[in-house]
Amino acid sequence: MGNYVSYYLHNQSQQEDSSIEVFMKGGACKEVFTAFQDCAKKAEKNNESIGIKCYPMMEKCMLAHSEYYYPILEAEKNATEVMIKDFLPSTAGRDLTEGKEDAEVEEEAKRILAVMEGGGCKEAFKAYLDCSDEAEKKKEETSAKCSQQMSKLVRCMHANPEHFQFIRAGEEQMRRELESL
Image 1 (tube, rainbow, N blue to C red):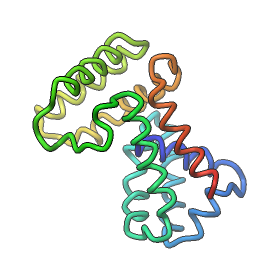
Image 2: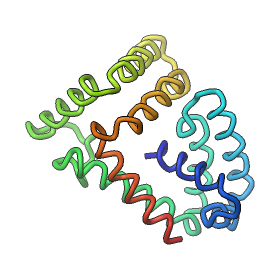
Image 3: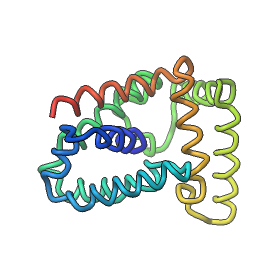
């Protein structure tokens, strides 16, 4: 969800005196937020993923000062849960890194792959997978190497909401929570 939080923060902070900007600058991460805004503008200009390139520094600071930034961190967590529940109902509330997948989870994984490979973003998805495979073979950091491919995939998914409604559900949940700050 970092991509969506970062895009939301960037888009809202573009508006003069937005409530999110006032909130972000009201805590200990004021300087990091300013650096995030600068990074986001450059990433956008260079067609790179704001979430991959810029959000990690913002997230690290917010986690270090979670008592203040709790509403944003909680909104991100809730949005992720909504997105997962909407698209992968059997995985909601589960740690998938725990090992064995049951038949239902495997079916849902196939569903994701079918949507990604057959939807309106199959070329962007394939480009990201190819880049990711190449990075893995060369033992490179995927997020850094494939930033542009991920950015194109995210933009494509936003442009084709009929295939990616599960993302919209998560984003809508996050937007509602953050607007209540």
